[in-house]
Amino acid sequence: MLELMRYLMGEPMTVNSLQSNIFHRHMPDYTVEDVLGPVISFAGEGVGVVYATNGAIPGRWINDYRVEDRVNRLRAKLSPAGVV
Figure 1 (spheres, rainbow, N blue to C red):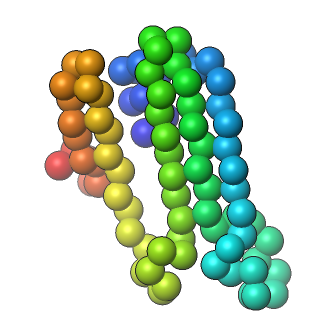
Figure 2 (figure 1 turned 135 degrees about the vertical axis):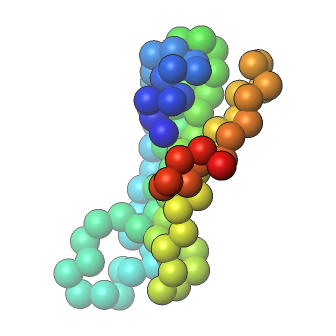
């Protein structure tokens, strides 16, 4: 996903991110974040947002990847198997 963003929008200039352990904080030894949201600004004046959580639907993992490029009018939904 990040390589596709670089291809479409150029090199990253800044990255700001927030991560937290919200959904699993009550579980012993679960010490990694379960929610994250980086915002990336690119040299081509684009802004990319990547968000992820494994707590949106308890007990279920959904792989959902989307790219929208409004300048080039590109819209793609990606799955682990490829572009849909």
